Image (cartoon, rainbow, N blue to C red; front, side, top):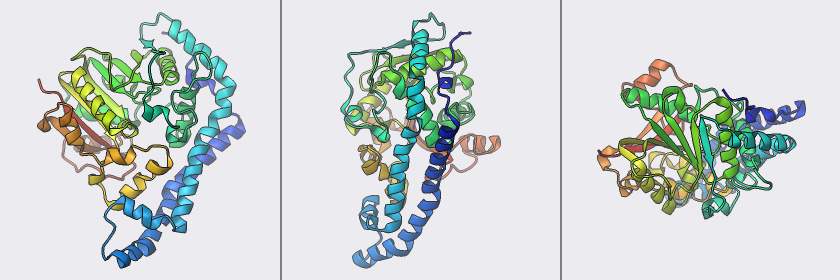
Length: 395
């Protein structure tokens, strides 16, 4: 075991900071639940009938609904509070991160300098940031993921970790039974119990939240994570060393991976592609095909495509496109995901698109039945479900 303190534990909020975190989490819940219901009621009772009267038909897509509803008070209230709550998420943890930053940098340096048998960290200070990352603060997070202000900086990793917990309304250390990776790995193990990946790669791994849980299902696998953001990778590596997780982190652009052909048995991602330009998405998927072993699997958790949900839900989802500094959101969702995969080299019959439950939100029996096709998958728009797309590389 490694005598390195878990970097997550350095941020120690005061009583008032804890109260502030809780308030913002509840405010977000209020916006996404109560105010969302109020807005939909206003749409159904006022906005939609007015549109139908003017056009002789229902709105056909989310953009038409957005144009029609923008002047409505319920929408303006929902949108304004949601935007401000998003900014408050990151601001709520800034002081505590800055207060403990020297200690966090120190422990990250200890992890990087250790001769740990549980992984490695490879950074590339010459890496050019892709424009879709470097041109704006994605998620309204100041500095995005990659900004550095001091040597060995981990601040953006810490802000993402602790701010993300406020965003989700959860504790910083996610229960290993919760989340995308826990759900996808369980789903894979049920669908194909003979599949035992030796090497697993996550693209856009940030701080490792959706990489580490794969070891609970595949304890013998080596984990690899790539990201363009050095502060997040330093933070992720420090976490891995402290927790004795065999994970290797590389600062790379997923459009141009350094790995040899046929390296990985499983490639995964979580909420990654909608934050990249579609031209970049095509390159990333082609790289996934290249570095997968024959018979290897690719499973990406993403937003549903526009064709999978109705016009109103498209309108709700695409709010982030205009207001959360995610300008590729709508364009990505307008793509045919199967076409993207076949364009990258995967055979159409080897591709899939599925919706699965969040593993902690349903019984073990129900989760297994959905995975085996014995129970219907959850509907899109359900916050306790995950939308997946992926493929198997032909042998």
